[in-house]
Amino acid sequence: MTEDSGISGDEHDAEAARTLSWRAASVGLAALDTDDAELMHSWRSDPVAAHHIGIWPRSLTAMRERVERDIEDDDRDDFLVLLPDGTPVGHVALTSQNLVDGTAHVELLLAAPHRGHGHATAALDAVVDLAFGELPMYRLTAETHTDNAPALAVLAKSGFTREGTSRAACLHRGRRHDLAVLSLLRPEWEDLNRPRAWDA
Image (cartoon, rainbow, N blue to C red):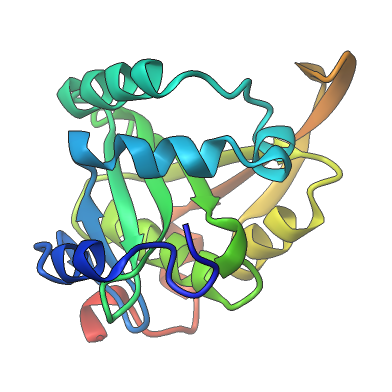
């Protein structure tokens, strides 16, 4: 993967032709497909991402199986985050969806070369708008390590409020880590003074 685009020219043309499920001002969301397993594997194998997400990098075969399983799961929606030119820069998902209670969990992973450019906030805002603007969600939650300052900043910028801490909730690299628990409620989203994804 190159640092400029993350994909070769041929792959770039294929990504540019993908159908977007959801569009926002600076990013688009395309439904995750089984062919994206290799890309997801490379992102999740990044040591920084593995540490902050609290994951153990697995084989490409295991990632393919996971992507296939997740695609069949009616309680989650997984998307590739694409730049306007079709470059894939990350993954965002609404998981543990409960349409009766109106709750879901938000997950976000950005490829290392594309961090620090505002893409994470754009992707998070887009999936939040999807959850509240198209789905009957009332409450979204997110978790991250308490020392993951970039993720906490993105969540705060998107309107999430820190509710508390799950103490020693994650084991990673031989140490227990606290998880920050954050949430965003529909009325709080309605009060946010920013353009919605459908205004793009």
